[in-house]
Length: 83
Image (tube, rainbow, N blue to C red):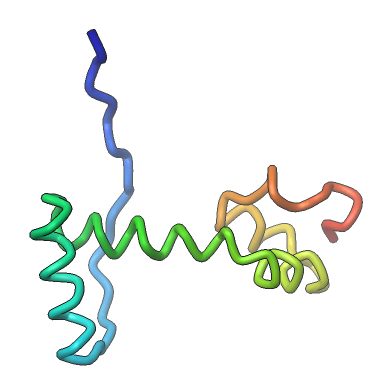
């Protein structure tokens, strides 16, 4: 038996403007996956952390400790390069 784990997203409303096309894509994809639109957007955005160039950019930023912690990518960024 698998127990249900809490989502713990610490969600907060944001005030972004996105195109009608993007809204329709999210709506359709959420129907397809049977996830809420918020979950679809959240999961998709977390996939950005798989962009190796983005992680390299963060590693090369000066004083990046706060950003690394906020993004929860400590395991993706080498300790010797932080700071």
